[in-house]
Length: 374
Image 1 (cartoon, rainbow, N blue to C red):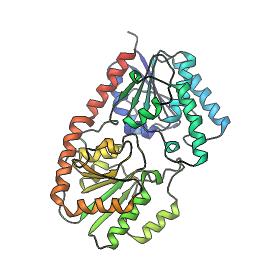
Image 2: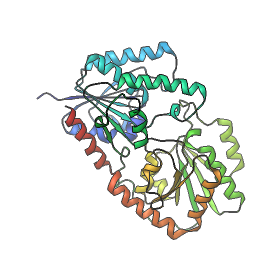
Image 3: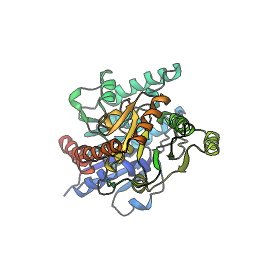
Image 4: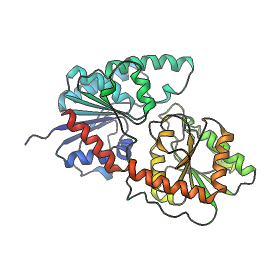
């Protein structure tokens, strides 16, 4: 029996593992021949032996060299022409733009596009960024004109922004809140006794609100608030808003926050915390907030697209204005001081995760899209 070929194109294999692996496994279990194309040549041990077919393509996350970008487009063209997929699933910005163009050209039967955030080009307002945004808008118009296409958005603001370009119709879109969380892995355990632990778990980017988080921690610690402030994550050198190494050294020397670097044991770390903070400038739907909800932890985040869609305001977490250090510090302090309210937010967060964010729910929604298209 012929197996339908499904090709994922994504610019970061680790992102695929953390955000799309359960979907790929589910597709394989349902009889799809699953191909995965990323720039990474080495396959991590945790996904060896599953039965996926891997392809390496030249695809830089941050590159702006025209020659290299054209090379990436031709590589995706050759890949799709060779694999002849029945369905392509394009994830992250460049795969969506380049893969969408190629899929139209080669008349690939079915296309799924995942818009998991619009990127830094849609946050900044300087002249250079505005010009780049205009170019990207035109590319989106070209890439999303496939006749048999579904576009998955994680929040309604991103959907509305791209709808205004006229590149596709509302009926071609689906709203799925995030990439799902394993509720058996992230369990709601009681808070530990002792000092309150506040944590931000994120790539170390300015757009994630790292600077505001550290400033809020400094403000509260200077006022004598008794709490630990953890910053967990690594510098993402592929992103133009990455935090400078020297700034990290300064923070380490000041001692207001504890720096932990990249960690894989996030479920265990969640259990050591009381409050999870993400003061981001804009998101698709941040997975760390889904994980916090599943872990039964109260959240403080910003009132921006993606972040506000990951919580129920005043029921599972608190919203603060973006880039407002005083408001951020005030919200954190409120949860530090009010144990009953904090724990009630955490309990409601777990219920929200069970209703909306389970990996089974998200995988089922994606499989419905696949079968509708093919």
